[in-house]
Amino acid sequence: MCGIVTIVKNTETQELPDIDAMLVSLYKRGPDDHGILSFPLCTLGQTRLSIIDLSGGHQPMRDNMRDMAITFNGEIYNYKDLRSELEAKGYVFTTNSDTEVILKAYQEYGEECPKYLDGMFAFVIWDNKEKRLFMARDHFGKKPLYYAFDDDKNLLIASEIKALFASAKIMGTIDHHTIDNYLALMYVPPHKTIYKNIFVIEPAELATYKGGVLRKEKYWQLEYTPINISYAEAREKVRELLTRSVERRMIADVEIGAFLSGGVDSTLVTSIAQSFLHSPIKTFAVGYQDYVSELLFALEASNKIETDHQTLQAKDDMVEELQSVMEYFDEPHADSSDFPQHLISKFAASKVKVALSGDGADELFFGYGWYTKHMNLSYRAHLFDKLFLNPYQIYIKNISVFSTAERRKLWGKNKDYVSDFVRPDIKTSKLDPITKINFFDLTTYLPGQLLTKIDRMGMMNSLEVRSPFLDQHLAEFVYSLPQKYKTGKYEGKKILKDLLEETMPPEFVNRRKQGFGAPVTIWLKKPAFKKLVEKVFLFQESHVYQFLDKREVNRIINSFYVTGDDSYFYKIWVLLCLELWFDSHKKYHRDTRAPRQ
Image 1 (cartoon, rainbow, N blue to C red):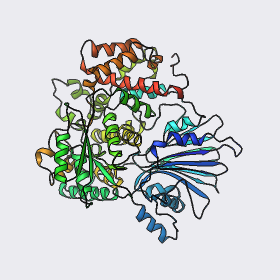
Image 2: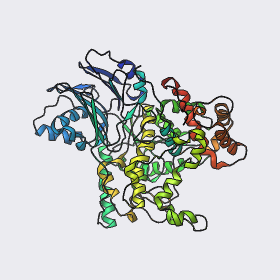
Image 3: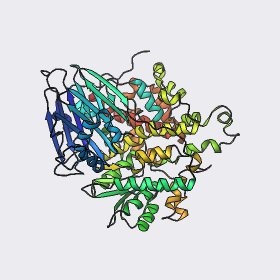
């Protein structure tokens, strides 16, 4: 895993932005090695976390035959098969790395090359003969890629936004419409950034740049094509595809571990992974002292699978850790599981360089309560929803931390910044409501919230995290299965639970889902966190007061701490994470005040 940067100059005589400082800012993404490769118009850089071909995979990598080079972040799981196909076509390789395979695949397939890659990736290729840049990002958006133009019209590209700022050529201009999206979702939608002048290569998107013109297009998208297959056949196909996916993600020249929470997803992945090893796999779990914890279930799973299991207990006064996490995130992010993801990544990184996870299973196999919520609404308690809203509309309403009306109050005189967070293609989709929820989860929630969290918290601790459920072929198959194969009236992940029951007892498999989030309601009431909330919102002029209504923010805080209304806890958490993020990133921003509307 790596951090990558690229600069394409507007003219050959243009002064080069500070690429050394850009690489330093990405040190945690790649502490093992670094390199810079320059052409008259383009300079590529990389920091490397060595996983495959430890001695021969140095980057940026120049091609051995053609005048082009690549800088690459990620892992290509089918690189050996793809290499064999390319060798049969006459290509000659000088390393054993997956990086060189991408470079040769681009020469053979051109802009089609990302379609041939099975893995997680963000890469940039410079063709010096054509003076043309090509870049792409993986199917689900596991690895990030951002770009911006400076005042001299140089194109700057990097794995993280902080590297763009480190160039000393970019200052961020806050997009208040995206702030509004964050207030609704607690994360920034993956098709946007928090800045007006910084842009993102979206999941499954490629881009070219030549002669001052940048062009972007999608190379892949999930397509709902209903499959006529029996449940037994579907279960066996899922077994086959998941087993193959786990096996492919075991490739490495370093030791691989696994996150083992004791839930269905991580237990199934760990069990399959262990079947390919001759010694116990190292597994990691985190708990919350006396609060709700799955540590006992993780231990039960470990004992059954026979792993080398290690646990960590989170404290409840982790104010400094929260501030550190918000500082590392390039954009505001308020998922309560950011904490445990950081802690378990830090813990695992002390033992291994790579960890498998169960992420993506809930999105593919309907593991969340919102997939069945509409089936269980009572007319007495939810008459309006029952009569006037379909399941998708109920879902959009329920996932909003701050509703549209609440955000208008927060913005006060600036309420024109209230905007829709749903991409137009999702909004106008003709999919049925449940499939539409699933499409939103897989294309917005998954990359914007979960994969951002996994990548940043892993890279903050120099740990590569691999997600076998997010295999392209598995996802395409499961997405088109009948809904009844994924969920019943009260719970989802039917196929996965059936598979896991072959290893674990039914009472383990079918217990109520607990989730991975921290006990935020309890934490906010602890003295350390309460003092922090009071300090940043009540006793000083917070950054958010440059655009949000101070009286409304204070009303929300008092509703929780004075009136005792616990329903406000996540609203406070979202505002707190936003303020801490602003405070730690203020040096990168132009004036954040919202102009009068």
